[in-house]
Image 1 (cartoon, rainbow, N blue to C red):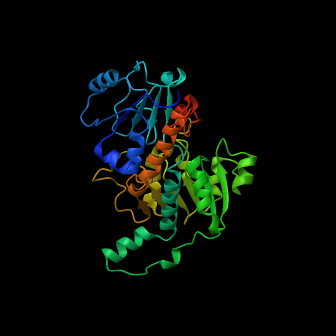
Image 2 (image 1 turned 90 degrees about the horizontal axis):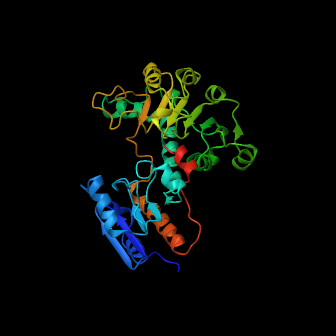
Image 3 (image 1 turned 120 degrees about the horizontal axis):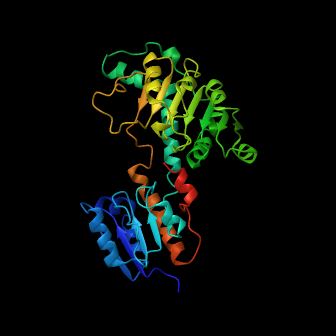
Length: 334
């Protein structure tokens, strides 16, 4: 019989109120005759595992503060609907291989990450960090304004072709840019659909474009692939933006190049987060920075909540799930 026999939501008050406000939470609660909500704040892994065994739900709705699932799952547990992104700390690959169903927010947040990439791109081209220092702290005005550039008709290179990259390509369509992409899955069909062209190599991507956007996933294959030699191929006045993961690049090399001041850099991600008070990244006038907030802004959290509700309804009705974490997706995730 379709439906969900028992549904356990493991959410802090903050997660519940912001991902599932009002009617969204009520709709989730109505999906199962056995619905329970527990707050995982302060729960040890052992205490959570014991509570999970006691409740023995068919479905778990999880979020950031949910502790990892135990290696031996309760007998009834079939599906974990995760409200946010990577599930690597919560479940094992073996559990997925054994048929345990897991979904996450999939591509729902991609447009907001792409939006942040566009924001950093425009900030770099317009040198907004420099003007912030000059106007607010030094009572200056338009010194060297001639160095400012527009995104219109620029050559843009994108490293990666996941959901965020595809959304980014949509966002920059009005700017009439010439775009090239380097990614294993960027084939002739993708090129035709996106209007971009395949880059011949990572070296070509960095050497032949005015703006480079880093959107590749971080995994054992991509870690450290953007080296100092690649970064030095960016011509003076060029832009490098990373809203993916800092570990894709050689961050020490990127910092050295940033200090030279010949290119503009936009970063939402850093190797050490939160950024230390004495971080050498602070105060660089050619670097646009945000504190790892490229994901959904708080007002867009319900997008992920609606996605989760749709998946729970699909599961209850025996329909296909969206954003399912397969073993392959698990391997490729950050």
